Length: 181
Image (spheres, one colour):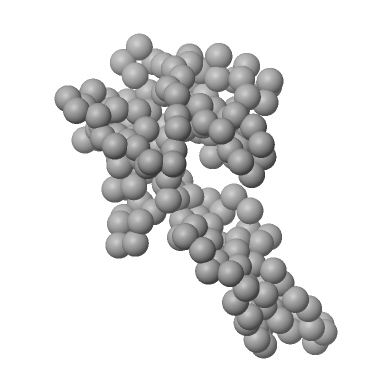
């Protein structure tokens, strides 16, 4: 398989932002030719699939500028420097929903768009939620609304493309694979 590896000749950093870094790599292809790759470096993210005692999935509804739409998603956020993905998942659960958990189950991690970014998303699951006595502070530039749905309602939202992102679609399919109703 090593015969398909591209070797980097040169890297040019284009942008270094709060969330992503953009660079252009010149690479040698397996056939000896050269090409350019436009790449985003991303610090990674963690998400959590929170399920209540009455089998409702807790989602957040928020506006996503990149797609110019309101989307319904599982709670998620960027991994802060020095933070473990499971810490991020709990922090985001607390900040976005007002719940916390002591029982976090790792589900998977995946690259949502490896054609141009190294972003890795970690997915966790919990069905043991506890309401916080005092709400945690959301990011000051983040505005979310809680949405609780049954699995069948969530599947309908997927069909209607109200739920339209990879991590949340994966979460719904995961719950279905567990036999959740």
